[in-house]
Length: 119
Image 1 (cartoon, rainbow, N blue to C red):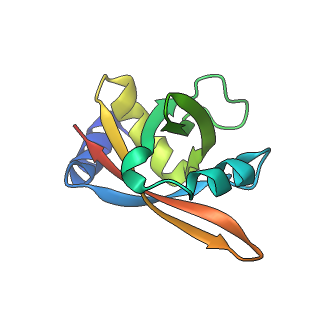
Image 2: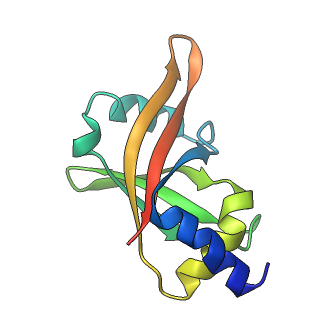
C-alpha cells in the first residue's frame, strides 16, 4: 500500500478507533491480561510500538500494557492494520492507546480491545 493511502487511513484513526489485540494466547499473555483486569482502565497505560525485529511480519506493531511502571507485551495489532499503520509510524507519527475492554474469562481465553488515536 502506498504511503499516501496509508495516511488516508490514518486520518480515520485520528478520530479514534477500537482495535482488537491479536496474539493474546501466546506465552504468558493470558496471565498478564488476567492481572490487568484487577486494575481500572485509567491505571493501565497502553502504548503501540513497532517491532522491527519480528521474523513473521515486517510491519508488526506491539501492544504494550504498563501498570505502575511495569510493562509487558500483551499482543500485536492485526496485520491488516499494521500493514498501513506501520508506514505512518515509521514516518514519525505518534499514536496514543487506551484500554477499552477485557473480554473473556470464566473458562474462555481473555481478549483485549484498545482505543487507538493518532496524536
